[in-house]
Amino acid sequence: MYYELMVGNRNRIPLPALVAFDAVARHLNFGRAAVELDVTTTAVSKTIKNLERQLGARLFNRTTRSVALSEPGAQLLGTLGPALEQIRQSIGIVGSAFEKPYGMLRINSSYVAHSCLIAGHLKEFHERYPDVELEISVDNTLTDIVGAGFDAGIRLGHAVHRDMIAVPLGPLQRRLVLASPHYLASHSAPKKPEDLMEHDCIRQRLSGRARFYEWTFRVRGRSVAIDVTGALVFDEMRSVLEATRSGCGLGYVFEQFAARDIASGALVPVLEKFSPPTEAFHLYYPARVMMPGKLRAFLDFIRQVNRT
Image (tube, rainbow, N blue to C red; front, top):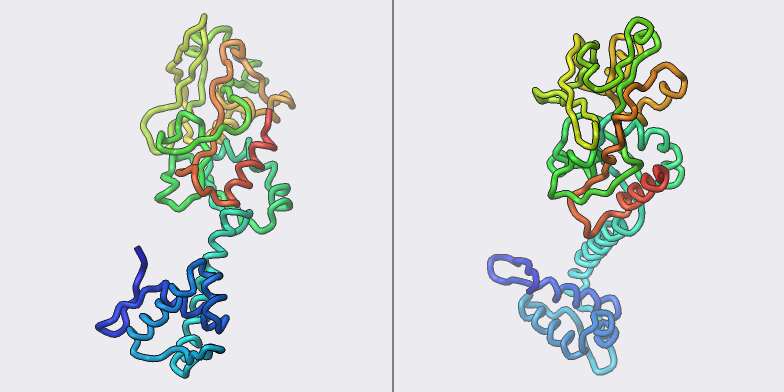
């Protein structure tokens, strides 16, 4: 199968014939053109004769000792040569994008994943890959990354669509119930998950959905979900963390996301023994084959800096 160009209303010119013409015109030698095209000299000669017949013009003046462009041949080369060179350069650019880190890379990520896995390493990534322009879109909805034009997304494993290739990033995450010292000064710390029903719990609603994140725990080897109540509801974990820090109630957030507040004592974990790690964040993308160099570089980098 080969591609053709229409010339006027009658002739269909096969593109391989134009490529053959360009090779002969550059070398002014049928043998060297045949070597470049990896075909026989006879095949090149036959192709040029057919092209001349289709165009109704002699493209080369040939003798037994030399080959020269005719006037129509020179005119054709003047326009065809630059066009073919532009095509070669375009193909080279596309090919190089799959070999080296280069160009715009668009990543869609939840805020928590961005904060835990990406934000602290952006300077190092830019220094290592200065030819990659990184665009990060932070939202808490499960965006259709293909439809929205993203190269990849980052979400918890359970949220990744099954038709995606998913690669785990960073440690297994666990959610902790946290409280500020101010809150605990006026409320008894819960000893078991059921005690949460007696507390003001800051809930988080799944973005764009009616249901809340479940507060789940491991009790005697089985998973238990507590339907907590409280006066505050947010659709983003950052707001939950801020309200918890302010003493508005108990919050349920990722341990890594709250690591600084826990280390400083601004927040105190409770019910830790009922909260084992569960799942990791994943970087996901639509196809394994022909991964662009920019995405390969980002994936390898993020996995390296978040290695546990």
